[in-house]
Image (cartoon, rainbow, N blue to C red):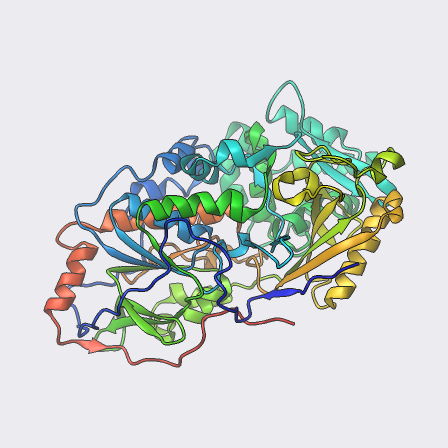
Length: 604
């Protein structure tokens, strides 16, 4: 067995520029001469960063769950070109930052992006190792209710070619190869398809089914079937208790939690039902109840870089967006009033030489550890919105890829399991072509990428490439031990796989991944518009009505772009604010605070 060098995400990365940015320049312009900062006569800092864009408002609230026009909005773009052309800096080239840059470029603005890592994608990143293996830092599944992300993929031309739809069934693999399922295939759609899936599942015994039905029958989901607003309001009010607390209040059983709900909770947020917010879990199942397509799963044809990011990068490059990789933000430069209160951001310092880049507006499209590192202390001192971010916690994960000389999930035919001869591309390998859950393993969810995403993960003459995501229960173990534990637990789930040999493996540890969806966190999530009028936030942790996910990141990117576009023009617009600041060049400049390298803390 060959074990690849493990990659610990969050540490300082070598500037290798390991991929090509289509049409997008990685060169930096000469630094703009710093203008004297000023204390603006107008109030450049709003009270709470309220939304001004009607389009952004459509992404929040109960109606956003039922709004089928969101996909069209994402596909068609902002539908407006501003009169004023802004210089906009976007810190972070994850999905949220790239989506925001798409809209801002289409609205006629000059956009420049800065990414610490040598590749784009954020938590959805992938890259090639020296042997040509595609490495990921998570298992990425596209639910059917990812309306905004699907709209973006339609816009870049990747939706029809780069997604593979899976059978409408959620499969649980139990010890000894015993399968259970939530089978949503039914002639009648939601909610009937969902109700019968839970009623017929083999994953629960009859007693647990009864208690499960009893609890779900008294849930906000049922109310939402005839009073959607009332049901959603009930769900929002459940953010301060765990799913276990809610589930067991009125009849839910421990067996249901252990055998079915815990694997789902781990797949959503990498924590179990005893620790995940009831709001988080019920939001997902509310969508499953009202939208038949919400529980349909898709996976990429190949790697996220090729299938998701490259089409976006081409779109950005064609519109002149400049993308600087291996160029993290080191400091946010800003104006303050006579009391030291931040009132306007003037630019950022980037890279090891702290090169000053000045902008009319700045978007920090980072994850939780990233935004915590880069926010100035003065922002926290004067605005509770920024200080609240430091109440958000994160979860660690370890993504394991293990390749075998046969088909691990093929349990019915040993000859087929061992057969790796000939061309078995395009998902023709033996085994299960879908996302898999398990209550009897430490990985929350897993899949055989050689079957589910064969475009770049199938290799002729080789078998399964299992990708599994371990949560914090296993994170602190050595990489060798995690690989051995993965193989051992796969052998327990698929006993016939004991006959197969591991030929290659990889471990990627992400010490600070999704924000921890524990009770009471929703109130700490910041809006995309902030009290500092030309400073904005994006990222899946920011406030929108979806979870910390690819869809959540996409929503936040669209929302922040809408806000900037809505504020760009007019006598008090963002361009006018820059002009006034330049004209009043006698104000006070913020004193540089302690410099910290912008990177997430490395975790062993």
